[in-house]
Image 1: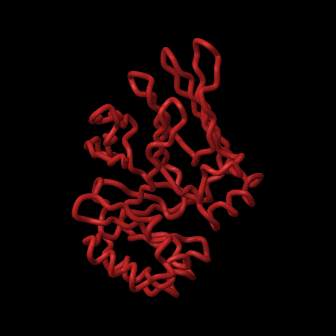
Image 2: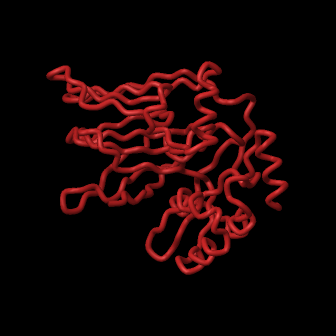
Length: 250
C-alpha cells in the first residue's frame, strides 16, 4: 500500500493492518473505567475516561507528543497507596489500563492494557517510589531490520528520525519498528510495510481495526526476571497461554 493510500485510510479513521489479525469495531472505545488491585501492603487504583467528555484533550495528546505521562493528562491516572499508613506513595498520569498487578514483594506495580485507540502504550511498570521502569507499545505486527539497515532507514528519511526512534526497539541483533500514522513517518511507511511480520514477542497477538490489541491471556501470570537487584525482563502469557518476555531497558 502506498503512503498516500495509507494516509487516507487513517484520515478516515481506519488503521492499516493485515486482515488476518484484525476484527471489526462497532464503535470507538469510549469507556469510563476503574481498575483496582490490592495486596497486604499496597492498594493500586487506576481510572481512565475515554468518553466524549475527554475527546479534545486525548486528541491533543495522540496527535501531538503522544505522551500520556504528561501532567496535561487529567483523564487517566494511577494511584498507589501504602495500606498501613494511608500515605499516597505516588500518583501518575498513565495510558488507559485494563489490568493491574502487584509483584509478590510489593516492590513493583504493573499495568497492562488491551486498549489501542488513542492509547500509545499497552504496558507500564513502576517501582513503588513511582519511577517508570518500562513503557511499551504492543502491536500484532512490526517491521524488522538489522541495526545497519535501520541506520540506513534513518539516513534515508531524516524527517522521520524522531518518529522512528519512538516506534523502535533494538534487541540483540535486530531492530523492531511498530507502524503508526503514515503522516508522521514522512515517507518511511512503505519501507516499514515491506518488512512487516508478526510480532517477535509472540505470533499469537491480534487486534481489532481501531479499538483493541489482544496480546495477553485472561490469566497473564506476570513474572519479573531480575539480575543484580534490578528487573531485566517481564514475562507474561500470550492469548494462547504461551510465555513470552519483554526486555526492561536500563
